[in-house]
Length: 326
Ligand SMILES: [Zn+2]
Image 1 (cartoon, helix red, strand yellow):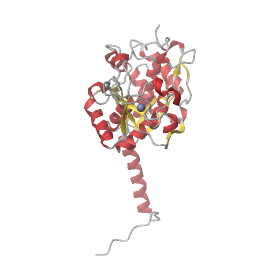
Image 2 (tube, rainbow, N blue to C red):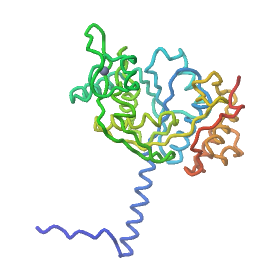
Image 3 (tube, rainbow, N blue to C red):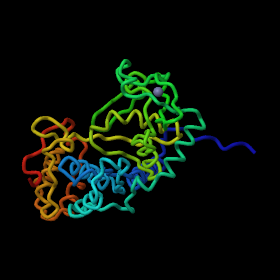
Image 4 (tube, helix red, strand yellow):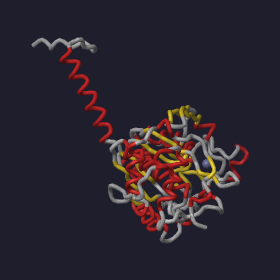
């Protein structure tokens, strides 16, 4: 039987053109419906203005796309964690009108998934055990490049590193524009399992984003330079790469990232509206910052309705003074 004639890519029949337009509209709608974003705080203290900016940015972007917004608790670093901080952050997000559309994922409970990815990389010889200390690597500018400096020491557990090739990894951030790294000279072979046995952030985040079918990662710009490592791991594990949108960082008066400075202040869950307006203003959503609504949910809905990527601020700036309580 003869194969049916292929239709040309263009179309000059009015009826077919209308169908094409309908299909495009349907595809755009489908893309919006399948949008899945997330907010992934570390429970190292209460939610502060800098984290609120990331939460609000990711939430409003997801809602503007009619998409899902998920929360993941990045509690993989026990020494840095503060007891009760995870529940405190979730309660504060709730007071600000932001609740995860699906059950909150805790990284501390996902060891099996990280182990499976680790085993895959090990089977493929993409990772190697390493006993090199920071001091060992000082002569190479702190980078691990190919061969180990320290000899294996079977009496101690090793760290595990990914072998990076001399390859340029590039992507276009939706807000920050094109970004590239030459992994071998910019970051070197990087750790995915620490000496203490914990899986490192870079591996966990890639496994979690893939499993949650995240289509777009919206987060603070402090993670911009982690992104090429994550894209590299996605490629090694055969996972798809989401879109990325890195928001401006909120700084203290000395120019330090808010979360790492002494001036980091908790946002007040009992009075969320002023901090929410301040977060909108910081992000560049001027209309939402001035909106008449008096409840957090209504303000967020207004912000999503009026969301325009072109409005967003790109560069870091000082957090407003009145963003939290002392
Ligand atoms: Zn080494």
